[in-house]
Length: 329
Ligand code: FUB
Image (cartoon, rainbow, N blue to C red):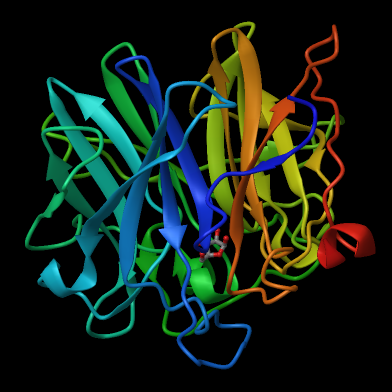
């Protein structure tokens, strides 16, 4: 599949997390909607209220919509804004991790549990203790589960240092190390953190940490992790420069060394993704705002094949930004 395919043409879905469960692809996206809230840097216009789950037997085949599997009205601690989620499987149960603002408008990460990958997911009564910010992505290895998370600006990561809330949000100076994503091992029952979250440090090829002013390369949001030929690929969005980039390391905690761009900017402010291998090929699930005519808060889910070069680097994929033909099609 060399041409990107829109997966859910009848609705707006974004921020895909994708896993293979029982031989099928399961997609866990955010469900965008028109709430009428004006666009701002705080992301208030991303006012999502529920999640659907989708599954596919083959990459070119039918996309099954399993309907609403979790709704904010059923989450006891809910304030607003159900953003990007992910799901992990352990011992016959499926655990959904979701960011949501609590009643004080602070993003926390919650857990909801299902017996099947397609849900429905039943939420816990409280968010994970000590959780903050957005965009959880789960990696499982040798029976241990790791959560990657964090996002700047509306994702509130600038309000924390060393896992403690600051009096006020604080951004480093341009020459200082960038605010890092976080990684944390989950408890055996999958419901809490088993340790203090740790920073994901991304170095350049000279061993220098990427700086806060390096907007073209530094982490902003949308963590994902996958493994290829024994190496860990940590990938993320650069936010205000709208790229998906990646860095490679030797273990789930890093450090990671910056490698390059996976996807150039798409139509729409945000960019977000999942990378999975399915039936011998690699795929990039992502979103853009082409079908909504460029409305950044109404995004559409896509998939395209992802390829590696012989040295393990990822071949850059062209996004849809400024592609008039796609916008008008
Ligand atoms: O969907 C809301 C936010 O937009 C996500 O959490 C970010 O990753 C960005 O895609």
